[in-house]
Amino acid sequence: MSSFNMTNEMKNYFDSLPMNIKQELTHSGFSATSLKDLKEIVSQMTEVGDYDGQL
Image (cartoon, rainbow, N blue to C red; front, side, top):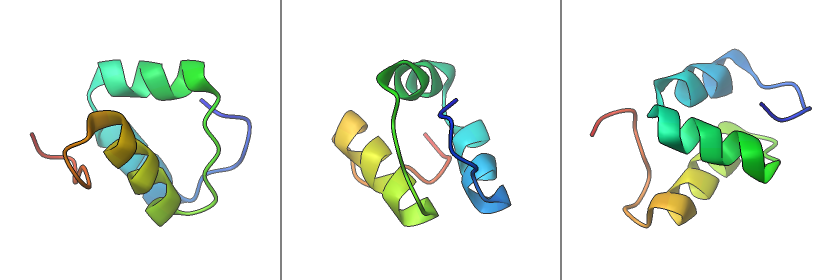
């Protein structure tokens, strides 16, 4: 995971992501300061819109 501290809300969202997305985020060195930022990063990665933990 990234070197910054995630809020519990951000961690719960990150943990809900599919393994391949978590791995891609981890390897990319992503930086997010809020849950909104994290969701935007995932949205850009998946090009499907905000990932809400459900597929």
